[in-house]
Image 1: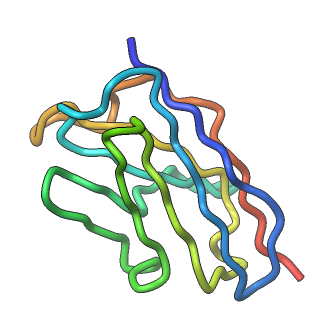
Image 2 (image 1 turned 60 degrees about the vertical axis):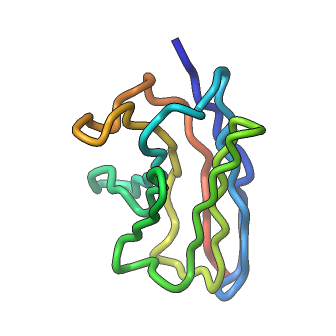
Length: 119
């Protein structure tokens, strides 16, 4: 069973940047999609960025500010977050969908990494 470990969160001022990492305990080469999610207090978990084989997609709220990249050679997925806003404050998680028709539940949800945007 593959596990994902998120890291790279922290406290940053509005307008700042962070790069999150999601390290897999096994190969992600054959996994169709890797996704970054976030959950703010009192809100549902939402998908903010996904990297499928050959494509990327973003939530409207982060488009143009966040970039997802997957490094199959390192079994790691990154989320570069620029121009951060207080509304980006949340716990960030990653997960995967094995096939295009799957849900993002390839692994159990990890502990995530906290991102706090505040002055």
